[in-house]
Length: 112
Length: 117
Image (tube, rainbow over all chains, first blue to last red; front, top):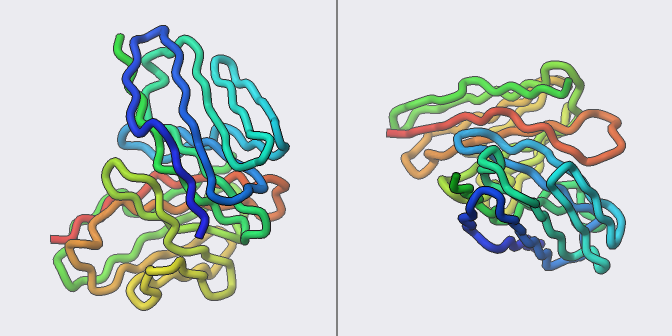
């Protein structure tokens, strides 16, 4: 079955430093989504990428979808303490029943 | 808009009892709802896809007789954990996809934390 892997599992950064999490799928994806889950909370949708090589920005967050549509990345510039949480990528395989397969997540800690 | 609620938010029960969890889309209709479980510090694992008016589709390894799913209306899906055991203790999260929407965005409920003693 489809597998979605994410690295790193944990990341500690000093406030102001940059952060990147990487997502790799075992199969080609029709699209990929990113979610953020705060401690004790539920996942909140951030963005969806659909096109090969697509890059989208949301303020300090930059999302990229690979040319082969099998990998993606999320980059945060100049992290803030409000960025703390676990970031999940979730992919939908081409031809699947539009079910999301979640990556293992990257837990981000920002030290003040 | 696009708010999903879950009830209860937490429940503690004795081993062998059944627990029902409700998932409601408050301001939109959801043809499809999804049920996930999440163990501490782990990712979300899809348990089943719930389609309004039809039987749920369960993921491999998920016992359909143990995790009963009913999606009787466009705004409500329920998950019943039957004869719960301590290993069923987990965080159960539902999500809903808005009927007819172009994108696949899912809106997640706040989750239900189940503890089985």
